[in-house]
Image (cartoon, rainbow, N blue to C red; front, side, top):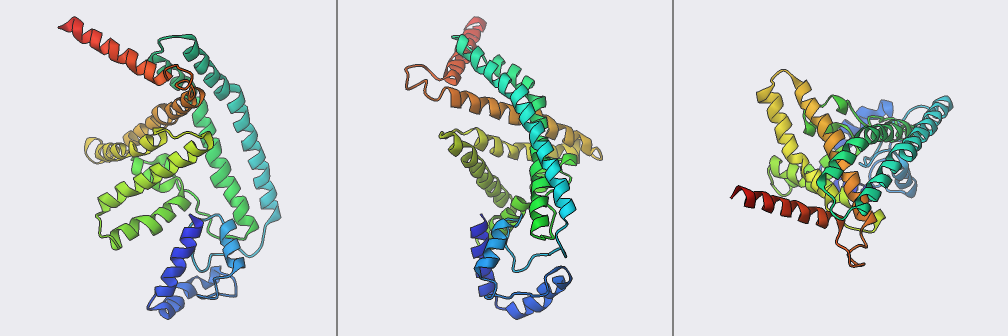
Length: 318
């Protein structure tokens, strides 16, 4: 993503018809926050400039970044202490709660010949609270602590890595606020080019943004496990109906009560979304060789049992 941004932004500088005007207006307006030496294109295309961008806590390139005056070592040491503490708490929760829960899930599924969907619901509820704490610790540890450590060491001045996503009254606000580096990249290199270059509508551009994000989420999860499954992709694309539902609730069903949309966001996030995805990937990872060994996949068995139950119920009614 960084290499693509570096190439595209420098291409924009190269093709900018009013480049001199851009330098005198946009860049010089930031001079108070920049280093004394201001590079211009193509002088900025150097290995040192590229390496700095690679290490900087941002995904979107620009010809100059805001810089702090000096590295505050006391700040770095404080952030390092927080990082170690957060990492320790995450490992504790994973070892004492998450791992035993997933181990019990596999044991229960392996010990029965006809697993039901009730098992997933039960373990999803058991996993929900611990998973929420782990995710919040991960968010704080990475976006607030680790990125600030990197920014402090590099004297990187733009420290807006997230905004108050926890107060989101609709799902779309959450996706705009929780990961600002990725949000800026998608807007700069995907959303606006789709509208300006290809002439698509804002609704279609939004759909394509979610599609790209869904594919990237699936790749990041599937490749380390050496298996391709649709759960992360479906989870991301399933956000689109939630975006419409929460916006409709906020504007029409509960006007002036943004907390209702916030409740839906937290319930879908903590109870339905992440815990269920963890369970499904755990099952797939554990039983990915069952078909090769002549056994049906546990999800196939659960689906067949549900289908037989529904057929039996329809027959009884008739």
